[in-house]
Length: 113
Ligand code: AMP
Image 1 (cartoon, rainbow, N blue to C red):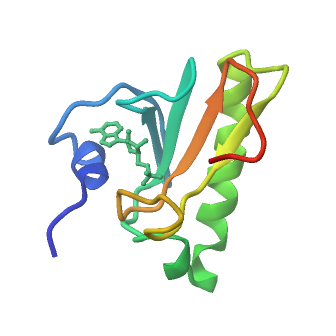
Image 2: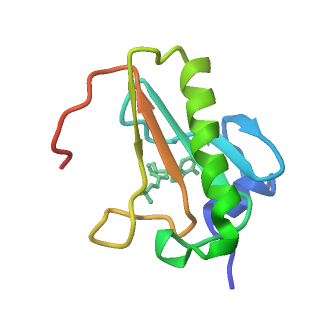
């Protein structure tokens, strides 16, 4: 199976603006930011998406959320921010490697498009 673009970033094969990495996740700035702060939190394991999560992924899912909270406050998003996971084609997912979007630095609209 060919690697996703995010696995190539995690492997250091293509460049990215990495803001955090640890043993479970890597976080980098989105190449096409939809807000002044737009960071992707990506598990090192190439899980294709939410529909592919299993019980054994509990730790990494929790860690993704805790990392998002930490990065939000490091980016001074103390007035609020949005976390998004797109799932599947109609959910707007374009990269088949689970990722959590952290968006902030502007007021968010509801409902999202
Ligand atoms: P999604 O549409 O939820 O699958 O999100 C995929 C995101 O990955 C989009 O917001 C893209 O802008 C972003 N993206 C795609 N390629 C790269 C890249 N090479 N570096 C950083 N972000 C990327």
